[in-house]
Length: 256
Image (cartoon, rainbow, N blue to C red; front, top):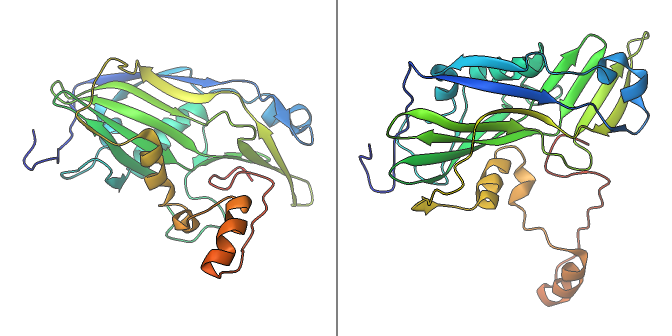
């Protein structure tokens, strides 16, 4: 399977299917009570609780060439949309007001051994509704492949249950949007079970993989950020001014 040291190829058996389950829990909080007053948020439910997919959908999550741990690549757009339609009938990958070249779907090889490989990925998407839109903070997740049998062992794609994990825009009769932010405890697609007893011979940490993915979305992630306390200590030593940033929401996702 390997043709170069520390580099591998990944493929799936085209005849293997994958059963994916979808979950959307009721929204628990919105700042201005949109999840009660706006029917589309109040009644947000998964479009298809279960769906069988061909292996080709997940092949699009794999690199097209040799890949080493820590390497990132883009995921096939059509497959991402197909999966997201199990959650909502009208997903959108290129977010509004973004640059034309912006794409919101990247993957990274986190680890592998002779039998398994694990891919971590990040997807930015929103759901277009009849009277507005729901912009999720991010979809993150992992895909574990059996390299010998060329089958999906486990797959999970979800919106992290952080304090605030979505934005919403409710379109009014005059054409203007009322903006909202809120929290949904579970919005997820999953298949199989993650193999917790596997020892990977080549790997990076989950945090390192996530950091590599973030860099494909936010250039400011390459800045070395420090706490205000550390900045006060280092400024006189380095003879540099302090550039302070104050935020009222997350910095590295789309929920603010």
